[in-house]
Image 1 (cartoon, rainbow, N blue to C red):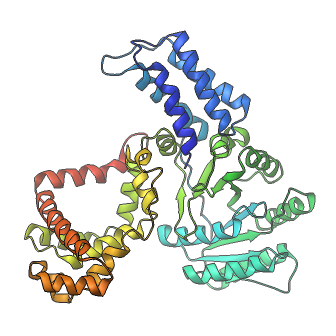
Image 2 (cartoon, helix red, strand yellow):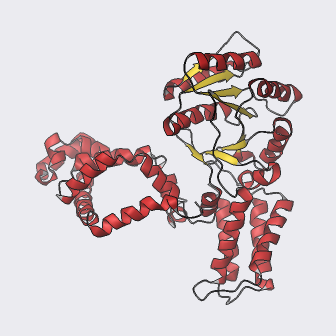
Length: 447
């Protein structure tokens, strides 16, 4: 995510290394590189220039504290300006109403249908809503079929009228169905086109005027760069939508759309799509995105993802087992399952400050735990519960059963023993203080 932009910004800050103060000369040299990095990321020249002018104004005349270098101060100023450019604050979705109605709009191929299902899943699991998906794309039968498949995956009802070619009427009937059958949220997926045209705009405008949604969200493929910004403006001029959704942010995107849409249409980015899975959707936080662009990681989002999988009762049981040195391979396997539920392994590691750059060229498979799981599943219940009995013959049997080498089994058992010792230490006072600090990270000022 934004790897090219991150690297170029990092190089630009090196200009200030070794300087004892910020001057007009070294600021100008640094900002020339910053502006070039933004232009390469497909940010418009005007916005890039306005951005660097604002940074320059804030940087010149700043007094450097003995504990802060000029480079560090410049990073802080650029970070704050990036957050301001993209936000500055996160804006939640409005789901008030009985039912609340959300209209999804965008070009064909932008990911509207997939996002509609992701949003339904998100609001069902995070907000306790009972959503209904309405298939309003009457021109593409595949879109209706896709929505049905996705709805089945997430356990959400999909309302369709496959013989009806009037999307306004379908939307009205879908809302009536929701009221009759107790759905307190309606998400209407609409038709797109390969390019903007009047018929599409008139159709979506008619749906919005008729159903009066609480939210109209414009979905845009972030990989289209500045074109995404131009499309966003054209849609907003007609629809006056409430928010933007950036999809495919995990792809080979330069970042121009994320950085500039807010300043062009003056509408907040509310969600980002970061993968194909139905839970691969995040609320957009400008400050956290600025952290990631500048290589600072995103520890707050990482803690939040962990807390989503956190079960207080299970955690207390686990803590008691660790304190008694009874942590076993069944517990270890359960922890792996919790980590896998949090999302893409490489993305999670990239949220740890300093790690993202180190792993950028590494191919980290989502099935990275598969070999470990196979070894543990090849153990008997008694062996998983009591690893101390794993002698040579048992290890050879486990290796054969899991398709692993005996060295891999030995290595896992050794690492498990080290993990037990570490967890025993972490269950003491210092470990508890660390976990309390991590849990409070989500409440830090500015988050």
